[in-house]
Image 1 (cartoon, rainbow, N blue to C red):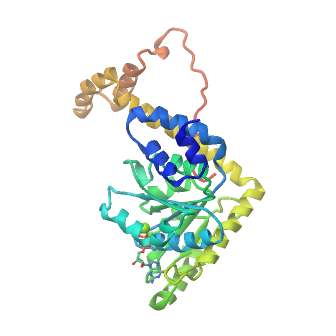
Image 2 (spheres, rainbow, N blue to C red; image 1 turned 45 degrees about the horizontal axis):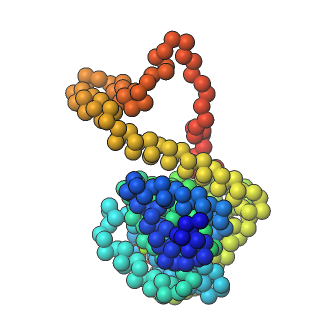
Image 3 (cartoon, rainbow, N blue to C red; image 1 turned 30 degrees about the vertical axis):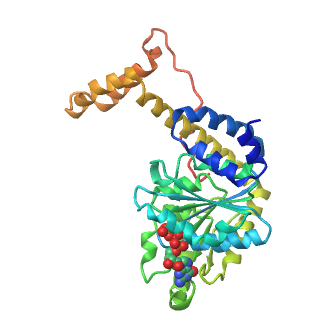
Length: 346
Ligand SMILES: Nc1nc2c(ncn2[C@@H]2O[C@H](COP(=O)(O)OP(=O)(O)OP(=O)(O)O)[C@@H](O)[C@H]2O)c(=O)[nH]1
Ligand SMILES: [Mg+2]
């Protein structure tokens, strides 16, 4: 076993930090090492409650995670936080800001807080966040929280890698519900309305009532769990217990019903095929023949002389180097692949 894997399995936080740096590395020569590490530690993964927390900028995600994390650590749990920072849309200072706001949690030896770069993937959730999560589990963390700013696609991405998706909402006057897309409501296992304190208390109650009503209108993700609304004040540490109790109640329900195992298996399938797609694209983009074809065909497409699907097929042909479908007697074989109907929700 590699030294890094051994350190990781021993629960060493420095080994964990190094492991995450390795799996997040974009250097191609790091990939085999990362793959070997993941393969080695794989049998020791899967043991955490995986929670995604998403919400608009400033909703209070980091404040809630800090309060919740400290509470969980005090109760004897080991808590890892992966804060996915969509650096493309925010300033570099925000990572430091997040870290500062979790300053009590980062001081605890039973906690691990890590900002992750987005790596330019859709929705601001890093391609390697799942791998970082597995590393946390291998290191013995039994709660893994992924914080991500709600920017549309990021909720979908994070929901696709966690057991429980928590949508955090800050109260606002009047019509804020319209700003939340129905699709995102459908992803939520728990809606937490934060800032239920001081001047905002009444508004928070109104917002909670609005969300409770709105949740009645969306189709439950599973018959064993109805999404629920919890009020809290992360700042004043009130309602944080209730928010976590909802996460645990959800967990118990989906474990007992077998939904969790099904959800994780389906997530693995989606992950597999998104890796195939991402890796294929990487290889394609570094392939000489394909690049030559692409360079020749792109101007033709731009000028409207060649339909894009025709050019795409030619680029792929140059990449694969053969065209079995052009051979006499070729019959297409059914191939395994992502089922078109398998959405993120089922
Ligand atoms: N009144 C009140 N303010 C809060 C509460 N929770 C967070 N805040 C404040 O809201 C602001 C944003 O809090 P953060 O925890 O950084 O919010 P965030 O959702 O992590 O923000 P980003 O990571 O920047 O998207 C800070 O000024 C917090 O002090 C709360 O429960 N009540
Ligand atoms: Mg934050």
